[in-house]
Length: 584
Image (cartoon, rainbow, N blue to C red; front, side, top):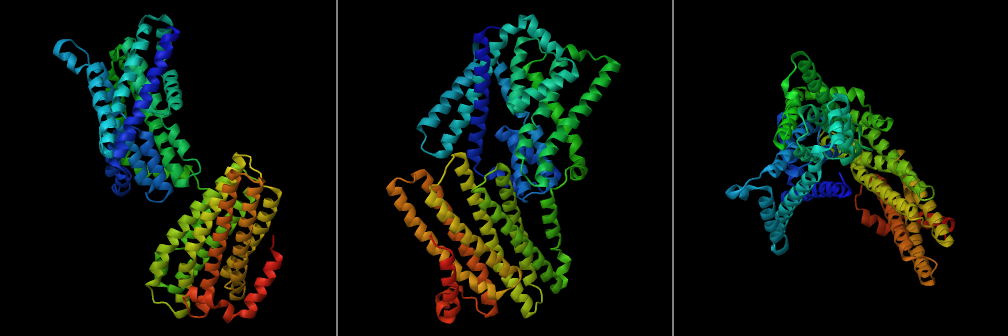
C-alpha cells in the first residue's frame, strides 16, 4: 500500500466524518430544539426512554450526542438518572442505523440497475443538495440541502476508503494483521482503541465496512472488533461528565457499563458456544450488509437484555459512584425540605432558614474564590467556582418551589415575614453567584492572554474589590444574623461602590487616551467594573429586604429615595466613613 493509497484512505475517513457531522447538524437544525424537548418531556418510562433514545440517535447519527444531552439533562436536574439510562440504552441501538446507510455504497450493477448504483445515487443527492443549499430562500430548505450534501460527502468518503483499501486484498502483511484480530482479546482492544481515537462508533463501523471490500474480513475478525467499537464509543460521553454532578457522572458511566457488560456477556457466551459446537460461521467472509446486521443484532440484544434491569443498574451506579463532599452537603441541605414538614409550619420555616443560610454561605464562598482567581488563576479554582454556581442554581430552584408551598400553610405574622425575606433574597444570592462566574471568566481570559493591568489600574481595582468584599460581608452577615443595624450600613457603602466604579471608569478612559492601557485590556477591565457594581446592587437588595420587613413596607424605591431624609445622620455618617476608607 503506497503513500497515495494511505492519503486516499485518510481523505476518505475525513470526508466520511465530515459527511456524518454535516448530515447530523442539518437534521438537528431542521428539528430545531424539538429533539431536546422530546427527550426531556417524553422519557417518563423505561420503554419510552429506550424508544426515544433510538429515534433521536437515528436522526442525529450519534449515540454520543444523544447520551451527552441526557447527561446534561441529569446534571441540570431536568431528567432523573433512571430516565437518562433508558435514553442511553436506546441511543446504543439507534447508532447502528448509520451502518445501514453505508450499505448503499455496495449497490452496483449495469444497465438500468446502474441507476441504483452508489455513484448515481450519490451524484443525484449531491446535485439536489447543492441546489437547495445555494438557491433556496427558506432556512428549512437550506438545512435539507445540508442533510443531502452531508449524505453525499459521507458516501464519497466511503467510496474513497473502499478504493484505497482495494489493493490490500492481496497484501500478506495486512491479511496477517487482520487475522491477529480474530483473537477475541486483541480484536476487542483494537476496536476500542480505534473508536476512542475517532470518538465515533458509526465512523468506526463504517471504516470496517469499507475494509470488507477487500474480501479478507471474516466473522472471526469482525465480531471482536464490533465488541471493541461498542466499548470505545463511551469515551466522548465519559469526557462530557467531567465536572458534572454525581448523577450526571453515573449517567455517563452507564454507557460504558452497558457496552462493556454486553460485550463481555454476549462475547463470552458466543465464544463458549463456539468452542463446544465449532460453528462454521467463523470463516464467513463479511460484507457491508453482514457487518451492519451483526452490529445491529449485537446492540439490539444488549438493549433488550438491559432494559428490564434499568432500576437495578442505577442502584449499582449509585453505590459505586459516590457524590463529592460538596454534593453530599448540598444533598443534606435539600433533604431538609421535606414535604411532611408542611403539616408543621414552624418546622418547615426553620428548615427553610437553615437551607437559605447554607445558600448564602456558599454564595459568599464562591465570590471569595472568584476574587482570588483575578490574582492567582488556576483551572481547578475556575472549576470550583463553576461547580458552586451550578449548586446555587439548584438551591434557588429547590428553595423557590418549597417556599411557595410553605406560603400556602397557616403561618403566623413572624413566619410570613421570614418566608417573604427568603423569597426576596434567594434570587439575589443566585444572581450574585452568576456574577462570581462572570468574574471567574474574566480571570480566565486575563490568564490565558497573559494580561497585566497598569499599576494604576491594579491599585484602583484592589480598592474596589476591598469595598465590594466589605459590602458583601455586611449584607450576608445582616441576613444570616437578622441584624438590621448592619443592614443600614449596606446602602451607604453601595453608594460609595457606585461612585468608585464611575471614577475608575473615567480614570481608565484617560489611561486609554494616554496609551497606558490597550483596548483588549479595557474590555476585561470594564467587565469587572460592571460585575462589581451589580454585585453591590444585589447586596443592597438583600439589606433592603431586612429593613422593609422591619418597617412593614415593601416599597424599596421609596426607601432609597427617602433614605437620606429618614436617616440623615446615620446615612451621611456611614457614607463619609466608607468614602474616606475607599478612595482612588
